[in-house]
Image (cartoon, rainbow, N blue to C red; front, side, top):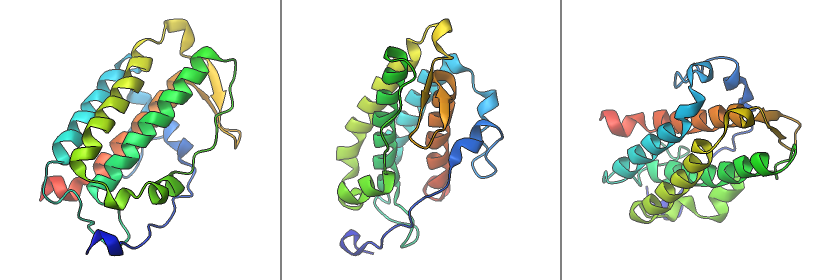
Length: 182
């Protein structure tokens, strides 16, 4: 299928905060098992996965018309890093900030994820991952419990924000397992 004719992706309207309380039945991510001091390393490791995965000639191919290609997922992961870098910075520098809403589906359409080139996505994804990983690396012991909240009222601490963030990365790696396994 030509990316110019890509069908729209069904918006994800689920509230994924439940992954902080129980393991994800799809990707297997278990937030309770995450060592908060390892967040930076896990994010860098995930970025290295995407850098490698996007060298695959199938990286721009959608496995189904309404499922993102690995490149589209990588664009999303890049933008997740950017959003979470801002949120972690806010929580560490402001008292109980409210995060600006982010419509990930609107971003995918507006930024034409379906037309982006893997070689162009990789450096930005790796840089965004390094930026947010550095924020997590610098969190002091007494800062992990600092709060922030989404506009819908969901409250996060730096620690739960990091675990929630990491689930998104792990889950999207799982989403492209078809390309890795075959």
